[in-house]
Length: 171
Image (cartoon, rainbow, N blue to C red; front, side):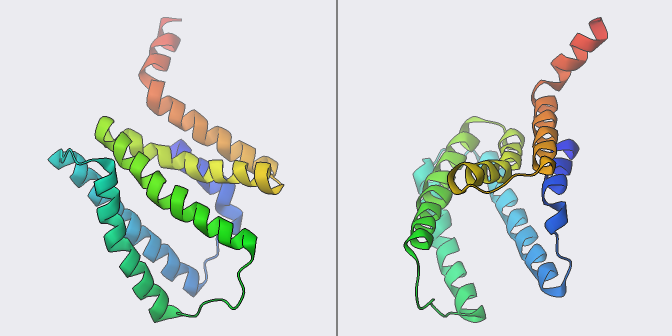
């Protein structure tokens, strides 16, 4: 887990902004992660056996009004012009990043250990960077590849660590 988190720090460490506004954003994200983690453990602990679509629907019914409330309290202004590319990105995030993404998340949460499902989120930022390179010709520097390797090695140790130890001890 430490190796995977370290990989994320390697990848995104140069872009960290420690200004006052950034601190507020980090606290907000940490708060949302804690709430999400509590909900994931709670869903797993009570063994709700709800279909993933119902859990996703319930979550979006709470999150969407809170998002709108936050938006109106901070800005609430619609842009004058939205490019087709930006609109397609918004639609993609709404469908794949929210509805389908969370449906798949709650489906696998029902069938796997919560700790293993949580580790899958380490690979999400790397996947986004790789898709950015593939679809948007964004450049990836060697630091991204080093961080990606750290994440993959860390996840491999988590998944197969005991087997790897047995292999090296026998030799």
